[in-house]
Image 1 (cartoon, rainbow, N blue to C red):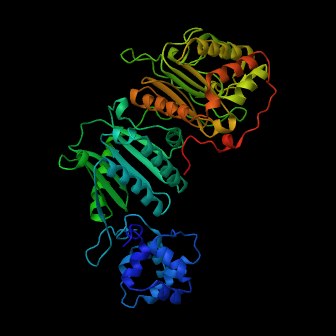
Image 2 (cartoon, helix red, strand yellow):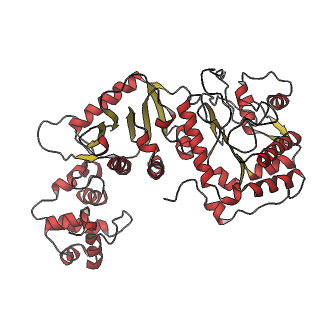
Length: 513
C-alpha cells in the first residue's frame, strides 16, 4: 500500500469490501476516476464534496456481509442515519485505524464499543500527540473543554517555537467552535518553565477562552501532564528512563480509562485557585461616555526581594504610556484629582530611561493624531481613571522627543511605528519589565491583566520580542523611525494619510494557516 494510502479511510473501506473503483462507481453514480483519486489519497476527502456522501451510500449498498458496522456505529448515535455516520467516519481522520468513541457509555456491562489506545515515545512524538489532540477536538461537538494538568516540563512547548505557533493556529480553529482550555498549573515555575504567551494566547486568556488555575504542592511522581476532554478522551505524559528523551505519552478513548483521568482533573481543580493576577483590573458595570472602565486594585507594592522593574522594558501601546510617562506627567493628566493607588514602578523615574534593552511598539496613526490635536484622549488612562483622560500635545511631544534622544544615544533602545490596520490585529496592548511586572489589556478596554510574578512577566516579554521580530523592516528601522518622528515633531507631514498596502492589510503576527 502506498504511504498516502496507509491512513486513508476511504482506501481502508474499499479494501475491506474488496471492491474496485468501477464497482463503487456503478453503485453510487460517482465518476470512477474521482473514486480512484480518493482511494490513492490524491484527492483530499472533504465535507464540501457533494459526491462523497453518494460514495458512502454506495459503500453501504455493497456491504453484503455487514462488515462496515464497527466503522460507522460509533458515529450513529450522533448522526442518526447510516449514510451520515458512514460519511462522518470517512471524514474523521483522527486516531486512524479505529473510529474514536464519539459518545462513550458511562457504564456498559455487555455488548461492544470502539475505543483506542495510542503510545508516543520521545519529545517529538509528545508534540505530535498534542497537535493530534487539537485535531481530535475539532471532530467533536462544539463547546468542548480541554482540561490540562501541567505538573512540569513547560520547556517541552516553549523551546520549540514552530510547535508553539502551530499549537496556537490549531487553538484558533478550536475557539471558532466555542472550545475552551483550562490549565491547572503547579505554582513555583521559573521563567524558563512558563507557558509561551504569544499575543493570540494572551488574547484568548483575556477573552476567557483559556483559563488558568494554580495549585501548591510537589510533583506527583513521574507524571508531567494529564489531560481530559470529558466523556471523550484522556492522556498522560510521564518521565520514563527506558524510552527516547525519557518521555512517554499515551492517549485513550476508552471510557474506563478516561473516567480515571477525569477524576484526577477534578481533584486538582478542587485544590487549585484561579490565577490572582488575571482580571486584576476588572471591567465594572456602567460606563462614562461609552468608554469601558476598569476598577483599580490597589496594585501590589513592589516586593524588594524581587528583581527591580527597570531595564529590559517592552511595550505595545497606541501612544506612550506607563513605563514612559513620568509621575509628574501623570499628575498633570489627573488635573488635580486625587491619584489612584498606583505604584511608582509603573512610571519613568526621570527624563532618562532605565538602562537595559527597550522595545517600544507604537501605533503610527494614533501618534500622528496626538500631535495634531491640542489634547489626545488616552483610552487606557481613561479606563483606569473612570473618566476621559487627556494627554496634551506638548506632553506627548516631550515624551516622543525623549524617545528620539534615547534612540540616538543607545543601540539597545528601539521604537517601531506600526500601521493602525496591522496594530489592531494584535488585539492587545501591554507593558512588561522582563521577569518582574507586566500589565496587558484588550484594545477595546473590556478586560485587562496585571502580573507581578517572574514567570508570567517573562512570557509577556517573550511575546513582545517575538512580535518585534515579525514586524516589517520599514516599521522598525531605526533611522526611518527617527526621521519620521522628527518630521512630526516639527509639524511636517502630519496631514498625510498613508494608504494601507496589501502587506499591511494581510499582516499577521502568526504564519498563515
